[in-house]
Image 1 (cartoon, rainbow, N blue to C red):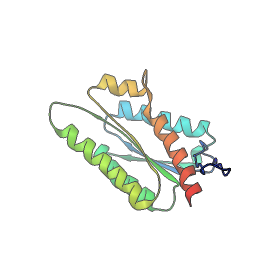
Image 2 (cartoon, rainbow, N blue to C red; image 1 turned 30 degrees about the vertical axis):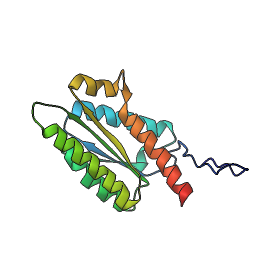
Image 3 (tube, rainbow, N blue to C red; image 1 turned 90 degrees about the vertical axis):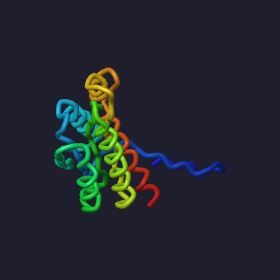
Image 4 (cartoon, rainbow, N blue to C red; image 1 turned 180 degrees about the horizontal axis):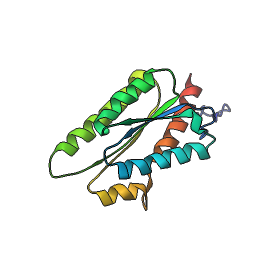
Length: 162
């Protein structure tokens, strides 16, 4: 927490520190080539920021549509300071992409709002597999890493606001 209590406004900013932070990572098995890379990025990020593997719980679900239910259950359990949802939805020839991406997004947001626990959004939605690979450890970075950063920062912010 960084606070400024001089003459200006008070500033609350999150720290990037995963020490003693129990985290659930809800991971879609669908598009596993992509999601396993997202998981590696998230775990690497948490470990590099002081987290320990013993404080991580990986919850595997069939697909992106199932992430919100498992994320909500994990968030409501009282066992975790944050939940990270990781999945990949790649556009195909049908409108299925739009339905799954929309509902997974909405559900993860609802899980956070209803539990009061940060639920970091690590669902990538792309036009093709090449874009997905680029966002899961390729030239566009690793969105799993980014979601872990968000989780750490939001845990710190929420603790500062309590």
